[in-house]
Length: 161
Image (cartoon, rainbow, N blue to C red):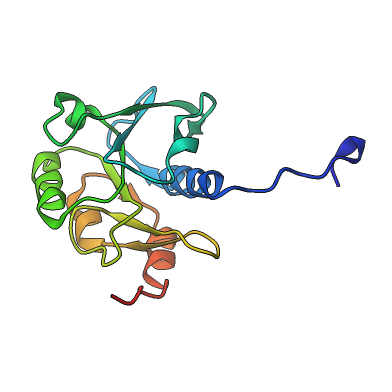
């Protein structure tokens, strides 16, 4: 029990998602590490409110979050991390095409097959937040992710369609 006899605050789904996103980012290396990480929110994500917090850090550097207007937003290729809500397969393909050649970590909360568009796909449900990884997208993404994280993502059970 914390000092003063207070019980710890219960973890919300938003805080668990925030912890997972920042955890994945902390095991990621960019070719040129930014002084400030730009986290961009794309689409109507259900669990992203914690990512808008003012005190987020990756590699002891601040994370500044903002919402993108859509796939045509000129700021899309300026992001270091993109967290997306539900996107159609066509939108995921467009996202992949727009990010080609850019070192951007992509994480989605609603891409159960994790085949298109995202490097990491979160599974948010009743239990702990889990993730799957798309190794092809990671290989093409211009960033390096710790092999132990990649292996952990591959060992997650795939959701049934």
